[in-house]
Image 1 (cartoon, rainbow, N blue to C red):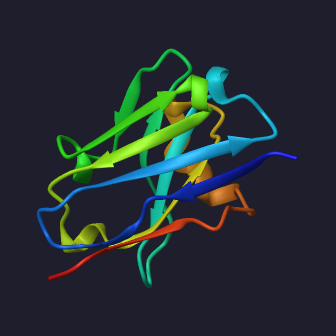
Image 2 (tube, rainbow, N blue to C red):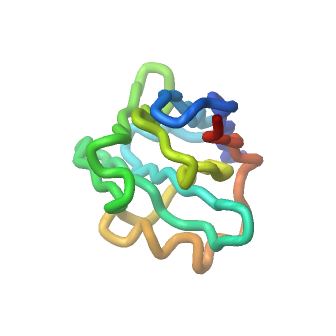
Image 3 (cartoon, rainbow, N blue to C red):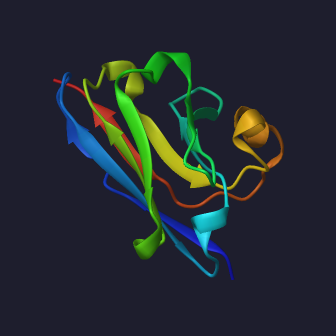
Length: 124
């Protein structure tokens, strides 16, 4: 059974940093595109970043220069390093497997089952 476990969220002050982890079980993510997504209160789920099997990356405009996605194949885990956090980054963060990073932002439109996510709260 394929399962993702997201972790690393918490409460952080504006300007602070967090590193989120997405641990996969039931399959090997080495050869997959993996995306990070988030859902803020009262808003639709949106794509944040994606890493391809060749380690190329894409980011939504609002996090470029602040967030970094990476993978550790030995640990079957994908990370999202988040720096210079802003209150508008407050959301539940999820990881999932899109068909490709070229269209990862579309995944929330049709993926019905998501993991538990990890809550990030940016507040003073």
